[in-house]
Image 1 (cartoon, rainbow, N blue to C red):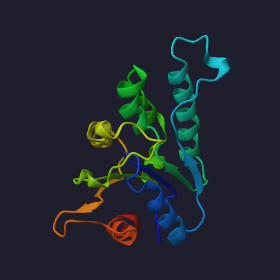
Image 2 (cartoon, helix red, strand yellow):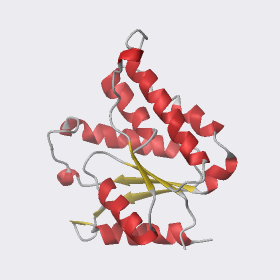
Image 3 (cartoon, rainbow, N blue to C red):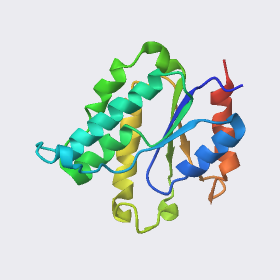
Image 4 (spheres, rainbow, N blue to C red):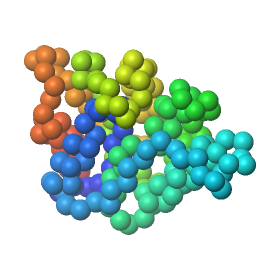
Length: 186
């Protein structure tokens, strides 16, 4: 039986987050799905010093409220993306999200799992015309790993989507199997 009500799936573009989310929903049933994308510059924020940061801050506040609620939720990327992408592409620091982590209820930390997908073989990376510069993805991944390590969430698992012993990329089932023990243990 799955003991988590909330999943946060983090990682660079095209690493398999969506595929893992589909697998989780197929195995564990319905979860409210939230996909965080790059910030929008809304008219109401245009007069502010940094409209993207204000948009992001408010969106993460709402996301953390979801984590404190009773609904089952899966986040396709969440607050750690702010730590990674804001200094690289938006000219501000996103580490304010760590303070947000600390403000959520302690019991929320127990029913939330933070999963980081990463790779040690960059052959998987490609420019899909929608993501950030492929050449920067190594830098992005390194920042995701650092942010994941710094996160105060107690339930964390990192999964290398590449199997160095066989020189192949893991199947979605292999990745799910790797995390399933973590998801079901007492």
